Length: 168
Image (cartoon, rainbow, N blue to C red; front, side):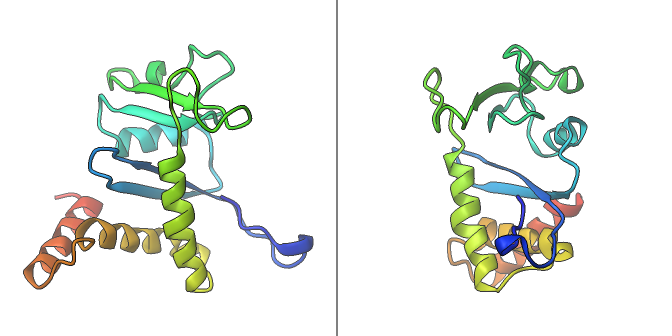
């Protein structure tokens, strides 16, 4: 994700990368922000930390995810050995949905475009250093309070969110 200046004027902004995913069964999603570093080792570390072993991963065909050789994917990467991931991807320069296997990234992109970016725009932006905390709060609210919980459920959601973020 890159914040663009209009007409190439104004302050240049450092790129940041939102790495996220959606559980297509529960519809819960997560997002992690990393600044500047979009390398394969960074991506693989995020996958190991945030995605359960045995998960089927669907992504776009970004250089950190898939090489030009279609046999070299996240599923058979040496750094993820033993994690039992499977991997499908879509090449957005050709299709929005992979015609061979139906893979698409529309769900997570919709979450980012419709929910997060609109909320950031309504607040007239978020300072770069506050993006991770903003994302944590947004995730916390969407995971634990989407059902209109009240009272003890709010507190339980807060405790679960802290445990999820910082471990037990």
